[in-house]
Image (cartoon, rainbow, N blue to C red; front, side, top):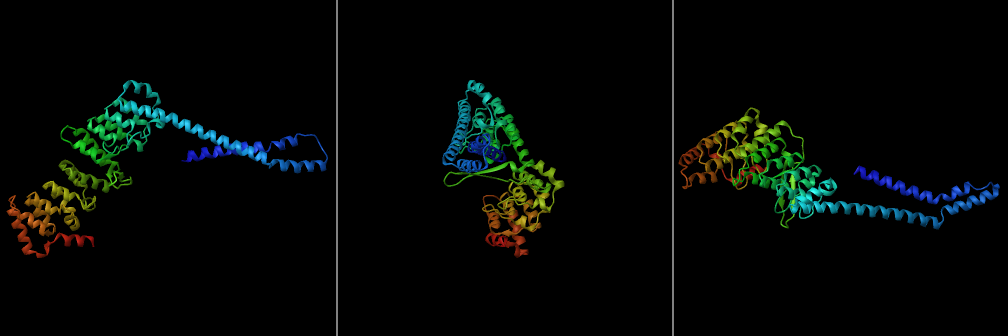
Length: 383
């Protein structure tokens, strides 16, 4: 932006100088003339002053400036047309997987030619990744700005997703190194069990653990318009980074990572609410990770223990669904409330949960205040 302002300032100064030159030529003629008397000089001075502001000279100056400005706009137009022509040529060569054309167009690769969305969020890089062209991607990606590197095609996703689909770790690493964001659909492709993409999934998870700002959420509204959102702040404390790592480890049921983080855990890290009332404790209970629950639970406060994600129930509810008496007892001992929905889940006959049902009924008889309704709990939580 600053560079553009400087260029506009220089252009204005040049045009203004030309205007002054055309208007002041009469002064040079007057001063170079022969010596005359004082009265005659005064008359000539008045005449030259009037001539300086004459209508003809004013029109000529304005026309000169207008012509130069029009020439500048025409040069700018042809310059943009030149880059657009080569940009579309590179795009079509990548789209058609034309190796011969790409070899001829390689000298034209530059930020001005490749940084353009030709069709529905598609770029030349998108098609190079889709056709699994490692050398073409290596030549293209250094020229891409982050905006076009993460350009999103409504049905096919980003260039990164195409690289994940092709199970090409080399291209994925190149895109990440040059600033690609990681969308959920790319992670879903990496988790797909039809093809073994474990190396790519581990790499992407490691990137997200080290830099949570790389995660980007893409949604569509009712009109089909795409909205992107991500965490833009890069200022994270060590505790916040550890909290995100713990949450991801519990969500993806990574026992090894939870054990590695155990020495760093404290109340602030464990009680981190990632959104929609999801916590590390909730995911550990949902994934039936008894050992993880025992590691996390001592640091949890009563709010975290009783947080209730919409339509999914509390951590205690998840433990009952998994028929894990050990987790149920641990949660109750640390102050978990018992909802009527939890008791109803324990009484279902599809799975034998008699031990859990008897235990919860005994706790309710001994401590009637433990029994609540979910609506009551949510109302209290909002207060």
